[in-house]
Structure formats: C-alpha cells, structure tokens
Image (cartoon, rainbow, N blue to C red; front, top):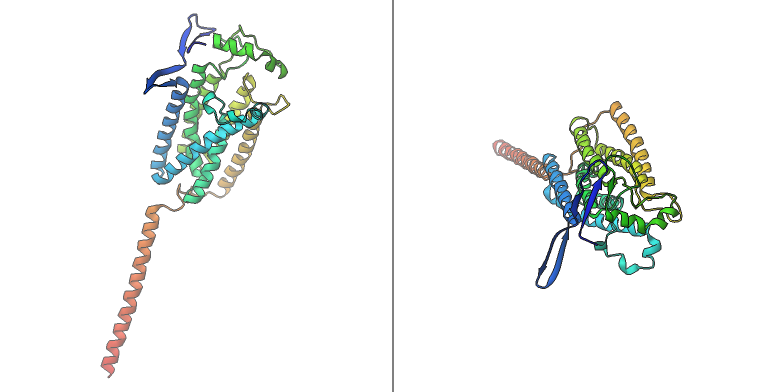
Length: 338
C-alpha cells in the first residue's frame, strides 16, 4: 500500500493527495519512519500542555506539582488507552498475548486514555495536596484541544470513518474502500452494510470540529459562569459524551461489547451524559441556595505555608519577649522592695 492516499469529497471535483509519512530516514543504519499520525497527535498534545500550563500559572498552581500530574497522567493514559482497546477485542488478544504491548501497530482508545489519566491524577493530587476537581477543570479544557487536533491524524491514516453518505462532504479513497472490503463480514455480523465504492461519513472531522468548538464553549463558561470546582469537567462530560453518543453510531470501526451489537463507547458516552447532567444540575442548585467561593487549585500553597510559619514564629517570639518583660519587671520590683 502506498504511503499516501488520494482523497475525494462529494462536493469537490478534484482529489487531495494526503501522505501518511512525514519523514523517512536512517541513522547509524537504523531506519526511522515518522508518520503524520504521530506528529499530529504530538502537536495536539503540546498545545494542550501549553494551555494547561498557562491556566495553571494564572491559578497559581505549583509548577512541580503540575509536572508530576503531567508525567504520571500521560503514562497512565497510554496504558489505559491500550488496555481499553485490548479488553474490547479480547477474543483476538487473548490468543495473541505477545501483541498486547505493541501499541506502535495501532489500537488506542480515547476513553481508556481519559480513564487512566483521571485515575492517575487523583492519586497524584492526593499525594501532592492538590485540589483534584480544579485540576480536572483545567485538564478537560486542555483535552478538547488535543482531541480536536489529534483527530486529523485519523485523516492522514484514512481511518475512523463512518457508513455511506450522500452529503457534500462525503469522503472516499482507495484506502477507505480497501478497509471496507476487508471488513464486510464484520459489518454484516453487526447488522449494517457499507458500499466500498460510495462516499462515507468523515467522522474524524465531526469530532474534531465538535471538540475545538467545545474548547471555546468551556473556556467561556470557565471565565464567565464557573460556580464551583469540577463544573468544567462535568460540562466536558456532557459536551463530548453527547457528540460521541451520536457520531459513534455512524462509525464502522467501533468496539463492541462481546457477543452483542452494542457499541462500547456509545453506551459509555450516553451514561456519561446522563450522570454529568444530573450532577451539574444538583450542584448548580446547591450553589444557588448556598453560594461559596471556589477553592484554590492547591490545598496548601507554598507561599501560604511560608507565611503561616513566619506568623507562627513571630507570635512565639512575641510571647517569649512578653514573658521576659514580665520576668524583668518582677525582678525589678523585688529589688525595689528589698
């Protein structure tokens, strides 16, 4: 298969040559290939980190603590994304255990990454004395940036597409057609058909636009209407879950609950929307009845600890001085009496 694809859209007469490989070279006899997929995801990750860092600075978060969350959260997200994918395809991986660590061959699920990162962040916040819900508010806005940009990696690979459509933005390429033809039996077992010669939904594009739009929506809420810690994280769950519930139903590469036609991510997304909506309504009503200031990002700011320590030392010094003054006055009184 060629390292590029000519992609056609229904409403555009010409085709677009889309390469899948960014660079191909050798160092000391070792062949190295950098794919656009990885480069685009890395770029999205970088922008997400930069935004998160900027927000952490504005909220006076400790840089050391932020780096700890980033390191452990990233590692856990990669592991979680892989395990989610592997468990969803256990019929295959159960018989090919040696392939489980081979993430370079593909097979990472965004929901697994989110779960892994969220769990790791919880424990880091617990150990480093950070406000977990405030951190999630920053992280979910950053995540939308990474997701919105990273989905274009799917475009360069010509993957994560949907069923047939006659809409003007319907997409077709030889890579897409080949993928559809090789999975006809799977599609039939799940109760739908896909014509390899007809355009398909570019579902990667739907999610990219939705996530980038969501970033601006959540950032606006954060700046203008944030009432409590964790509110932005709940809004993320509603915003992203709603899109995934709909778009996942169009995709041809969904992961399914074993032995069923229920799409794992679609069911999880619908549940996420329901839970986050209920929690958001309950907590907003609670805030309306009893408004409270939003907690700081750190439970114990270094500057605050230092100020408290200095204040305590000053108070102790004043007590000592006061006691010495009393003792001196008593001594002088005894001398005068004698």
